[in-house]
Image 1: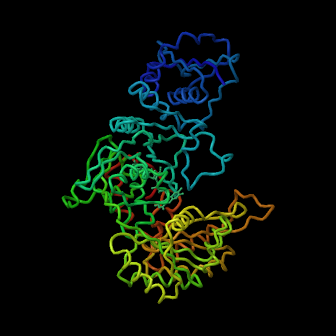
Image 2 (image 1 turned 60 degrees about the vertical axis):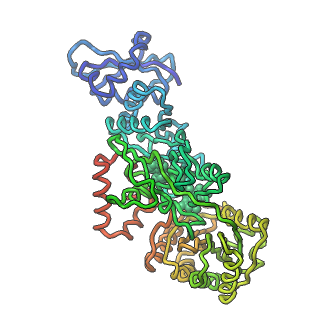
Image 3 (image 1 turned 180 degrees about the vertical axis):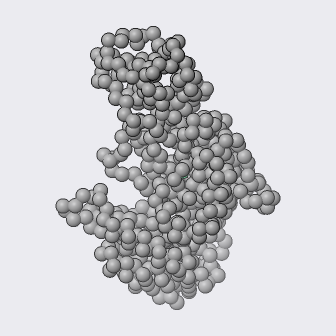
Length: 559
Ligand SMILES: Cc1cc2nc3c(=O)[nH]c(=O)nc-3n(C[C@H](O)[C@H](O)[C@H](O)COP(=O)(O)OP(=O)(O)OC[C@H]3O[C@@H](n4cnc5c(N)ncnc54)[C@H](O)[C@@H]3O)c2cc1C
């Protein structure tokens, strides 16, 4: 659709922030739109004028402003729409919320035309979601948020200042692989993407640190480190596609966290843009450092609600001298889950301990024809690393065999296949509804949680299974229910969600937590409120208010 719009506004309205800046940037287009033979509408106030500006932007019409010399008339102005250039422009009130955003974008084009920005439109619809909340493509909302791609820290600061000036909320975004709705955004919000902040600023083997911009992919950092004999330990299964900034904002976990800890254990210092646009550096480059409150830990896992991470100093480590994959198959899920304790009781600390229950093995076999179930009904898939790998293997084997396992050291080729199956072998039948989760429990209670699945299955008429990062008590349960032929796949029955909530409550009952690694985002806030005491929630909100009094960053998430 194309067309032209002329708005005549009073001096009073032209002086209002968003309309006047629009006026300045569009002044050169003014004279072409004087054919007043078309439809005329009265404009009653400045807000209406701003809405027209927004609508013009949204429908790609040329919108021109003209300041009336006369004092404010009873009806505030006129718009003229030449009908021959397209259908009449509608000015629905539904677009009112994007008014401030349009004004922000106008200011941005005036003040920093070099920053790449996409206005709210159907083309930005994908930025409305993350990997955990994306609907089928045909169900995307019509208009996504505006999206800015700053290439420098100063540009991030400017964007935040402009957003604060116009009261537009900001959603920081890495790669959008989050699974909790943390990076979701509405049409009236500004997404600040870290896509152009991808420099690995420094690698210092002597200090054992790397300094990176937030948009660096986890895999890209490790590719840079590997030739130096170094690695960055946190390894979410999404490591090839997720950013260091996103990993920090979610305090991402991963397979190797059993030995090396979650992301928090690898972050020493952060540069963060706060809600007033100021830039702060927190933490330290030294491995130790306890001066003042630990604000690094505060920002790690804060899901973009406290500030935008624009730089990170992370710990790097020497690559292990050896790695070895060991499998332990059991006759039942319960026997396998019970054996996790046998590993803890030994003196071996594997880098990875993954537990796959019977339905998970059957599911992988069905998807990949892998033959795992033929070897047993449950699997502990373990990686050892470091010096003394033979001694570690011997002690681990003794402990697992005593717990009833059939233990095998896998060849490098088979190990690669097994880890690939673990990371991406789990497929979900498109003819089933499903819901997931990422609860964590004390390691001693993992077996109890698995044992409780059958009661949840019986109560809600669903199937429940899980894989677990058993080394740190983190379970990924999956609840499935076959979709009847005449049912709408988009309408997930309440029983599926209720069963997922029941798994979370089972975890809470044994001293666990709602989220072990994916974060709260938008999808787990109600459950988080069940876990956190009222006074604790108050304290968290007080911190949010102290750093971001206007609620600029990522409203409706995490807290
Ligand atoms: C196939 C797959 C496997 C996964 N496996 C794992 C796993 O093993 N472990 C795990 O923990 N997660 C896993 N995830 C989830 C996801 O990859 C992680 O949460 C990851 O850390 C998100 O990174 P991202 O760059 O995609 O961030 P986004 O999804 O873009 O953002 C996530 C959150 O961080 C905020 N954010 C992003 N960048 C910044 C920044 N620079 N400053 C402030 N806030 C910011 C966003 O606002 C949002 O709240 C997986 C996801 C997929 C799709």
